Image 1 (tube, rainbow, N blue to C red):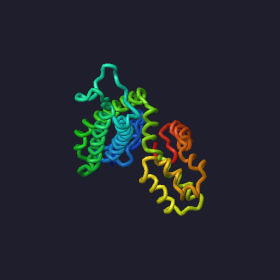
Image 2 (image 1 turned 135 degrees about the vertical axis):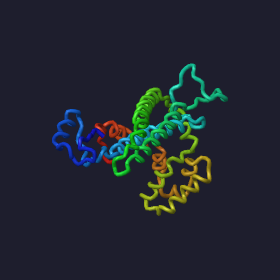
Image 3 (image 1 turned 90 degrees about the vertical axis):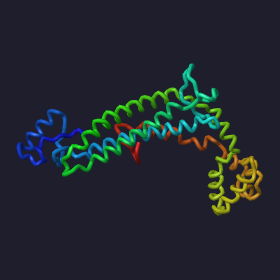
Image 4 (image 1 turned 30 degrees about the horizontal axis):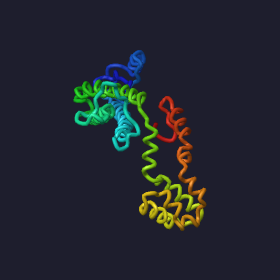
Length: 263
């Protein structure tokens, strides 16, 4: 949106030359609008506000996950919590994710302002000023909100409390069912039809509280997989072996350049 126009009342340079416009705008650090009318086309501004909305949505994505992980029955990750801070007004034991909830609400506001920017694109005869009143609200509103959201999310991440023991407890509560895919792939690699192997694993998962023990005792699976192969499917290190590569790829992104998809 760092563009401008000195192309006259309807954009045809009736009163001055394009060279004059270029010289003046260059001194201001602006580029000439490609095709101007009385105003700079508002699709540029809509693109900008949509980018702000997408960034707000990315923050909300993280905030929503934190809210879920802080639920009492999950409790794997928690927001920072001050020594004198209160949680639930009715239940003193709770630590409500108020910061993340706040961020989710603010993201909705930023999205509504992107919608207003899109409504500004069509103008009567491409020259009315109905967009002006909208932009006087959404320009300071969306940018200020997003600045606040970025600062708050950074503070949440810096003070995040990660409870590895809760993660281990929740994994244990599933009885090892996280390994069902790995077991299925191992069966398929040994020549078992996928649908048949799926049924074997499903009956173990649905028929017993202790999935791991049921797999080890299943006669069909036992005929195909060695005990060591079954045990290897439950190895957590196998599932986390590429985590460093993912983190490195994320940290390598710079200057807004994403490889293979959005940042």
